[in-house]
Length: 100
Image 1 (cartoon, helix red, strand yellow):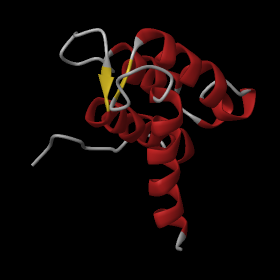
Image 2 (cartoon, one colour):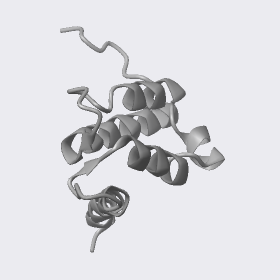
Image 3 (cartoon, one colour):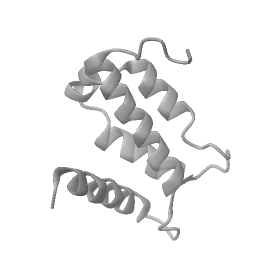
């Protein structure tokens, strides 16, 4: 598999592993989400590589519909924001964003 294919399957597998601790295997409850963040998003190396404002924004808005659970869609949107935060840290913010 390509790097991107491996990344995609890894994201799904991490979600499945963490969501699989209760009866609803398709959503993360608060405890599962907390475990996922502690085990998968807490290394110093990661923090150094990702814009911290992007991390804060991604994690604060992860439960978009505020139902107390995180669906895979919500989770994948959070991962996209974290990926963007990595890109910003590496290359800086886009200049002229919003200008025509």
